Image 1 (cartoon, helix red, strand yellow):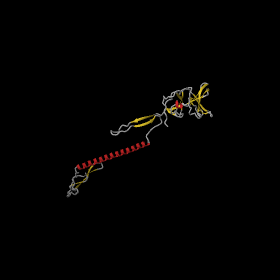
Image 2 (image 1 turned 90 degrees about the vertical axis):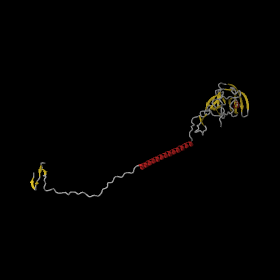
Image 3 (image 1 turned 120 degrees about the vertical axis):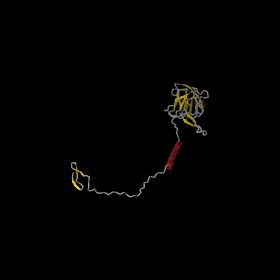
Length: 294
């Protein structure tokens, strides 16, 4: 259901809507004594209130209309109840036992002094009107119809334009609506998060393949260079020289003089050491004769 809006400067178009002495008795059931003393008559719902008014309608607005003032505010919904400024109205106390028409008459006041007033009485059962004088006292309540409003939840629209990635491709602006009230947080959807994860995994695999391909290519290039260098070195070097070989020809050994005994005629004297490290001559012979020790 669309919430109707209430302009801040709204005023009724019919004259006499704000008369402070326009007292009425709205009688629903005379036998059950079901009646209310109300400021203004039943026609005010069409002549002196917004066209979409209903006792349960809460308008989207920011302030009470002219000649109405804030009487109370609901703690849960934040709705403000506006009552006429003609009298000191307040919202019905929560301790009151709600009646059949409690929702219709949210504003309640009391007469400050005793006196006599002119009252127009309407009987809804028989559809009659009667004007009469009535005595009032400080215990008599005076009810009124209320106008309720609540400040709307504003929304702000942010336009985000993504620049084109190249000269031939462009992207349309993205409209994002974010509520002004706190507590409503937005984030990546599960599909977007899964897409980001898959994209990151594919990028990692491609990067690994690229690194492996570069490594293999560099390794093959180095092996080719070493092979070519070794081949060039072996082809350009001189063949190894052979060591000179010495050839031995068979020959005859030279004659060796066999050992001989010394001649008996020893001309040289023989010597030996004695116990005192002295030199002594041994026996000697001279011309075949033994001469003796020296």
